[in-house]
Length: 232
Ligand SMILES: [Zn+2]
Image 1 (spheres, protein in one colour):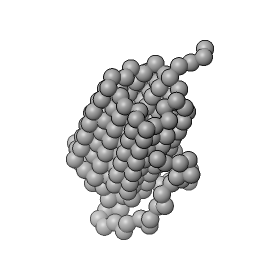
Image 2 (cartoon, rainbow, N blue to C red; image 1 turned 120 degrees about the horizontal axis):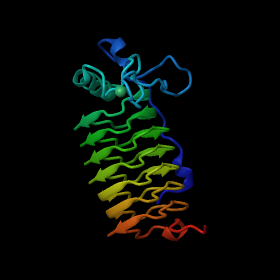
Image 3 (spheres, rainbow, N blue to C red; image 1 turned 90 degrees about the horizontal axis):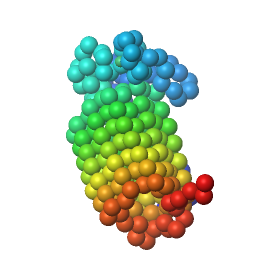
Image 4 (tube, rainbow, N blue to C red; image 1 turned 180 degrees about the vertical axis):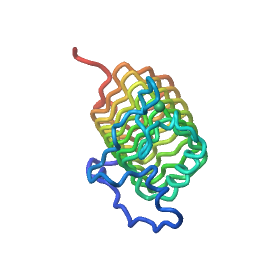
């Protein structure tokens, strides 16, 4: 089982040298900002509430060449070791490896992830809410202050990971595993969990208030230190 001391981030190795057109990389990774934050500029499409893409006045949903943009972004996500300050809400990614990445302040809300392998990645202050994950791996990851609220997980694994202060409220997870992970101060309130395992986990301050659990195992975990009810 992980201890609290084990939650520090894995070191980031030097960025890979990239070939090709460096301007294309700026499509997704905004390096103009010294702080980590993607620009909060709304899409100009009428009544659209999504943020615009970096360097564009439309969001990914309303950009005219959506398929081409996703194709370029997919390549860049695989090439880049550090993915930060990017807004890729509504992206659809299929069968790629995003292993050993540093993902910081990335917005992937309302997206579809199928057969994506995030093994070994550090994920910080990022948004994955209202997304669908099918056959995705987040094993050996360090995830902090990241939001997966309202997302669906089908046959996904978060094994042997440090997942602290992260938000899984209202998720719908089936046939998934969080085994051997530290879930300190992460929240699963109002979640629907079916055939989900939390075996040998640190569940101190993990919040399962109002969750619906069917065939959920907490074997060898300190679930008595988790929160299942409210005093108020
Ligand atoms: Zn839009």
